Amino acid sequence: MKKLSIASIVICTVMLCSMISCKKYEDGPMISLRSAKSRVVANWNATFWTNNNKDCLHDSGSDYYNCSLGYDVWYQYSYDYTSVIYRFSDNGTFTYSSSYNYTVPSDYSSCEVTYQSGNSTESGGGTWKLQSNNTELSLLYTGDNTYCIFSITELKEKEMAIEGNISGEQIKMIFEKI
Image: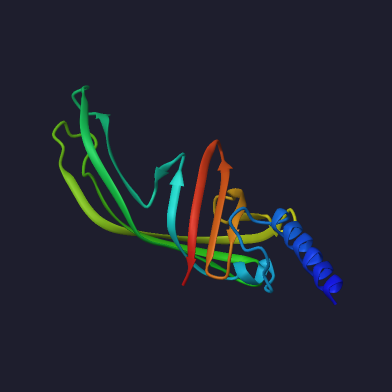
């Protein structure tokens, strides 16, 4: 009986070690009873979004523009996204919508900076698919035909993280299921 117990422990340990080393997603679960596709198909809210390590959800800064008299004028700007929602459907389509508040110069030709504030929305969609043994998420945005391939670094029941190099820019996004 003891030999069987020790043998069972050894077999279980070897199996566990092999599962840990073969984990599909860098930060994902070791084992999931749901397919990758069924975990992606949902409504997701972006809680983290960077472009070349710069925060895209809460962006602010300053810049210069050349005014009508020919000299540079310094100004500040800010964009604060209140929501970025992606909806992935079972039929391979997706939609996205976002809303944000902004403060920007009201007239880029004026030599005296005045600001306007407001809110705006964006939306669109396209097609999606999993590829490379379900470790990549490809998105084809309709309208401008932008094609993006993201590595999936985490795909849990209620969390998903993706990253990719799009036109030389390193994009990282983390989503929570809503």
